[in-house]
Length: 142
Image 1 (cartoon, rainbow, N blue to C red):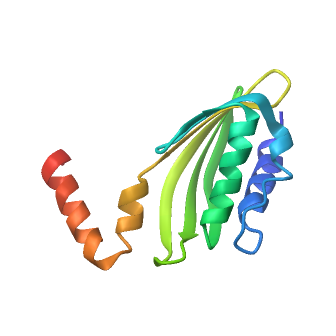
Image 2 (cartoon, one colour):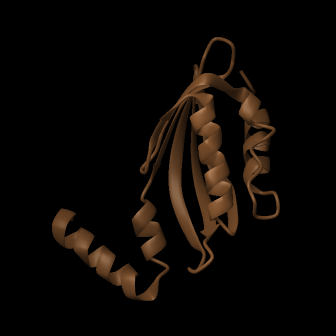
Image 3 (cartoon, rainbow, N blue to C red):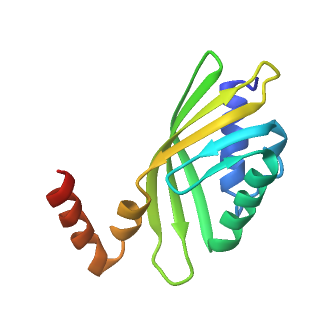
């Protein structure tokens, strides 16, 4: 398993390559049986995971990530992050999230679970939508 410092260096390099993510150097650390889940999708296997990373790169005009905190406990790494994403027709948005990565005995990532509020963080930066979305969430859930 990578050390925390090695992992942080690889992860930040993935997302800070002149706005377009480059997963080529970190994909070898993912196991062929990777199980990935986030707010939008659930994927099984390295082929599906690699395809998702390519879609993310193609859809975004600019994508950067800042690691805020990261800790390792046993075979699990937790990290808190801030991702700045720009799409072609909308202003930049900062997504605040956290990820849990689980490593197997060979030191490869076998599971990744990302947690974030996709719509809230994006809508906050669209003038008409931001206030309405937050009011709806407060009324229905808060």
